[in-house]
Picture 1 (cartoon, rainbow, N blue to C red):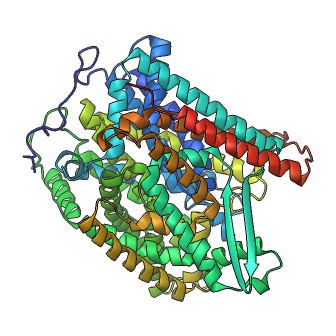
Picture 2 (spheres, helix red, strand yellow):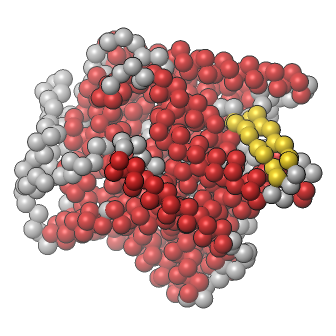
Picture 3 (cartoon, one colour):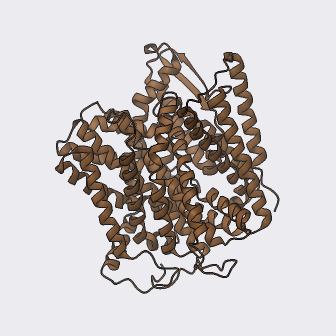
Length: 639
């Protein structure tokens, strides 16, 4: 471990185009563009998360967009400026995940009839700020002085920033992003507005009393997600889907109870199978917490030294926001949390307990999220598992203190929402600080931009949620925006509050499955280079199976793109495909938000009344075309 008073030799500061080491980082154009992209990325990822049940990091596309816009509008820019823009933009994206995984549950339990603007905004703001504040004293523990964490996405983003100074790289990046955005937008218009393409292709058959199901959602966005997370994670998600849908549903039987086997498969998954995934996620969350125990101790030591004024004098490239300011902002967030909790429950006892649980869990899961992001990247961080663990722990504590009914449900979901925002934001902050350490950015300036990004994006979440909920058939929680995490958290909250029965036997089975997977993973870790990470498998169990199929296809395409290259070259080879995929995700997601906005003004989707045969034929043709287009647009260019 490096001496904390000296710079990390592995990440030397890089001189920028104008020779600046940081003085030109926070210019007016950087602040304006960063805040704008924070809003755009946050709005896009609200849709992505509600539909796909997972989000992807916005760091690389935001970095590329920043370089392109600077080059187009100002002719020149520096790496440090683009880095600060992507730092701010990705903060908005990460906050979206924390909100959409939890806040819709308030609608699903019937506590809200519509999203409350100020409550959603305050949950987002306080959770996001706490994620940043908790992460700052952990920066030196996880980012500067931990050579065991590779930070794959942070390093890749730094490589994109450094390569982006070449004109040919800029042109290629622009082409991929724009074409990807057009593809995503056209598909969403065809499927969501014109209705000439089905959202999914699925089939189910019965044999005796067993249901056998297979299907896949038709969405270039999901293929893009699979390309970005790559084959290993895509396979693990598919394995989870296979365990739940292709093995678990037939084993449970009950086909005679349903007239339609497709409806039967979905009902069995919703009421039984996904709770097995919950049990596995709880085990995964506990194991992750145990893995970062030393980092937690080191972070507490770092923070206490800062508060006692024992922090060594550091250079600009080692300095964080002062501990006194961290403490002041932390106290302000705590007060806001207490006000929110009292507004939820109107009970002083529940308010005090909920606020303490939020702070304690938020701190612990900041360390967990930071460690996992450093290990496997921001896109692969199992925030859902952490939040499920928070829901179970909070629900159990409230139950022990005899808080039940609506009061108990709302308090549980409030805790989960803040903890989820903390985990999402802190992981993103950690990733961006690693990128900054490589390109020579000043950490305290990045932290200022992260606070700004959270502050702006927090007030966008509620309007976008309202647009999508009011103007999508079935609303949030329906077939088109299933919001699987929020639905699950609503069920868990009902169970703890005495409003429903939790299938503890199935959660126990899932915990047993999780332990077996951990054992298998440890064996693989010792004997091979492959891993069986528990969280992606558990995620696959409780997500709709239709998501796993296109994600797997995207992962296969990424693998084929790197089949003849050594692992050290994979990031470079996949760079073109990642930018195209990022464009597809942004195009489809922003178009979906735009269509919801049109519907709010009375411009509704058209119904061309195509026959079932024609609609299926068009859907299959579009699916084939999407795969072919991905092969073409993600094929690496020769060096």
